[in-house]
Length: 258
Ligand SMILES: NC(=O)c1ccc[n+]([C@@H]2O[C@H](COP(=O)([O-])OP(=O)(O)OC[C@H]3O[C@@H](n4cnc5c(N)ncnc54)[C@H](O)[C@@H]3O)[C@@H](O)[C@H]2O)c1
Image (cartoon, rainbow, N blue to C red):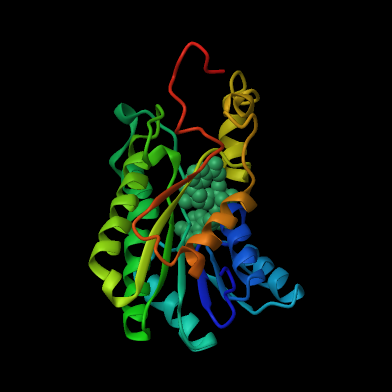
């Protein structure tokens, strides 16, 4: 049911972390992949790794917040591999900062990357999928979109907004064969997460131990959830926000919490 033979996938932010693991995972399942990243070398490396493993992939270098990028990216999938069946809107990132000191420009930047680009990418994908008979959209949200963390007001609001977006897509386009779901990662050991933890020397090191699972997650563990949501194994899953977080958002703050 997770066989993606004949499918074509686009993954944004595919040069590192979760996006890279997702691109590799979807390709291993048989999909041809367009690996987008703002870092051209990183996008190339992901595409090259897929090809070296016998898969089909093309790199796409570009900033998802650039106007017109979404149409060009989706257009590349159709031009290179003939269709678009899976769109994983994954590029994103936090800029932890208290709300009272956040500038308008910094706020706009966070929203542009974590919401506006997801909107425009998803809209471009949706239009192509509607004319192609359907498809699966997967958005990378965050535990910060369902629970709160000081310094993440803008990021959290954007990550909550993408959950609302997939619910709306599910309701509006299910009849046309479109499914849209969000994966909701907890703390995952990526460059971005490591940089944040290292900026908190007194608390960062012990963070993994406070996750109910006792450790941080791996990008590959998010990728497996993306594969599920993108595949026919999830044929009746639509509008869901799937936590993949070792139990983080399930845990009540309590005297027994680590
Ligand atoms: N790592 C975590 O713990 C965690 C937790 C929850 C949610 N997330 C979300 O998962 C997604 C991936 O995060 P990650 O931890 O794998 O990050 P990462 O920093 O490891 O990788 C992000 C990739 O996206 C690329 N990128 C950044 N801005 C871009 C842009 N404007 N256009 C195109 N590409 C761009 C980067 O070059 C990089 O290759 C993000 O949406 C993030 O918010 C991560």
